[in-house]
Length: 176
Image (cartoon, rainbow, N blue to C red; front, side, top):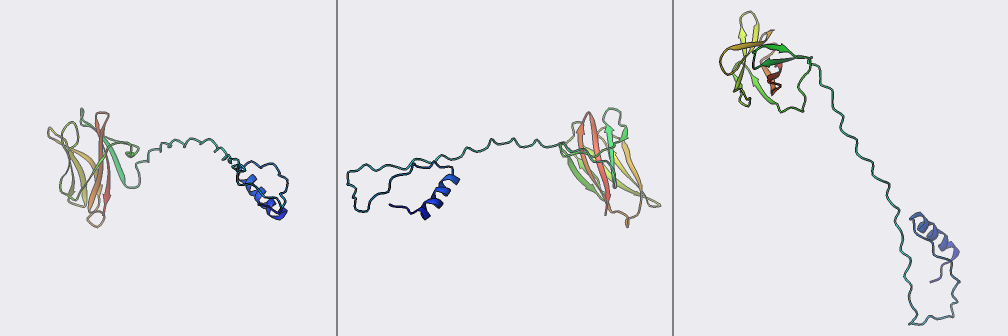
């Protein structure tokens, strides 16, 4: 096959762009010459694919800073040993195994804790006073939070809880 200079230049550019090797120029073949059927057919030189750039390692996930316990959240820590309720500065993160429940005045029970089930209840009292109480196995109730408001302000609480460091961690929010 004979390539004209007009056809040869774009083919050469395509071969170079693809990273292939350029074959040495050959002398033009006369149209009167014939090739014998026994002439060896030469295969084109294999093209070498460009080597890919080394893969960059994926960035490691950045540990998120814990969110502050604000915006309507009440965060507490209840020690199983002393049964003391202490406020916490930050909310639970997704790293811990947590359980969630809601209470509209009925008891919500967390059964997963090593010291036995924990019951949370929203108690409505007179004069728009409310309190959330926790009852740990072994008796006795602990008041976790007191909150003013009527049924128009909130209808129930949502709670997220986990156990760590020998204590019960509870994040709670008053909701409508």
